[in-house]
Image 1 (cartoon, rainbow, N blue to C red):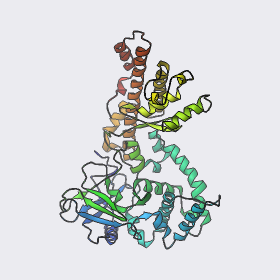
Image 2 (image 1 turned 90 degrees about the vertical axis):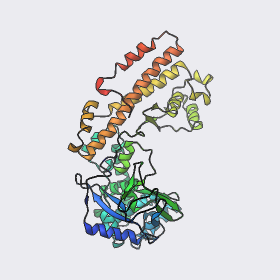
Image 3 (image 1 turned 60 degrees about the horizontal axis):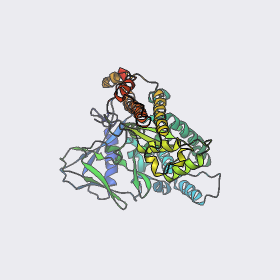
Image 4 (image 1 turned 60 degrees about the vertical axis):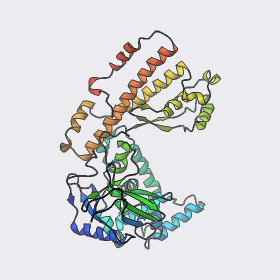
Length: 458
């Protein structure tokens, strides 16, 4: 079931005037001039600021029939870096920024890539609301992503990188984007733009982006993307034409959803990018990093093995409900390789156990990384969390979604901790031949897990 933060069953319409204006705006931009869909803008009655554009078919539709067609090369059809450069009011500013980026001669010049140009342009559109974009801007909601949350709300996501990301973005805003405002004050008066505008434009780019020839563009109907597998339409691209095509027969008046291309995202990424979570998301994961110690006398040799293995120092690896990935284990085997091991180890061998001690060190590292990640959550116990998740109507979307993210991440970490302990027992039994009673040892390890943190599949 998709969280109500995305597709809310109980909805009310924004103003009929705004809805009609947006429908007209979209119909005017249909390059096929035969739009078969209606556009209904909606908003959440609980949180107010969360909205979506819903699509309905106006008549019976056959499978593979084209419902709508975008010519993304046409002015004011999509928000893009190209659109920013040809804007009649501020296009010369974005063209100047592009020229300085291509020349790369002036080190003090403000250099923005195309994605950053879209951020700045969308901020300008939001503040100035030119008539050619007004109908779209009037129905464009804020995504309720953690970037837009208060510090108090973010405290529910300890262990999530959002707080660090906001700090990095604050630095980026103050050191780079505000320089643009200072250089072009007649177009970007500093008092009219805030850090919150910057966060909004970032969430807009993250949650509504469509890739075209390696560039990012923002399609107006991207708000209707769904992560539900039971969708009835898809987007397909032919050159500069992006078409909305029916994937099955659709009855007149039926609401349609698009199948989102990023279907392998865990709840943390879904929340960060789209402000939603999915119940029992099979793609939930936790990220752990491995960084080589530069003081290690074998640093050069290990770095060389990292590179040959396609691994970077500081790289983040994914934990899933299945536990540690083979890539993480291989990286840790290299990390813990000793001078003695180098007498026998080869690059191919890191995909298999190197030695008794090395394998124990790998399991201990996974154990330590998971325990440290688990300790980062200053949140309720798992039992209290389960009770909270049963009271959907009594809580806000932010509390609900944060609890879902915490629950899945904690489960993965606890499960991986148990697997690491089991691996240590099995390693000792295999290499040392100490006559370890494995069933007894495993029973002892499992007894360390408290009843209220029972591990269950995500």
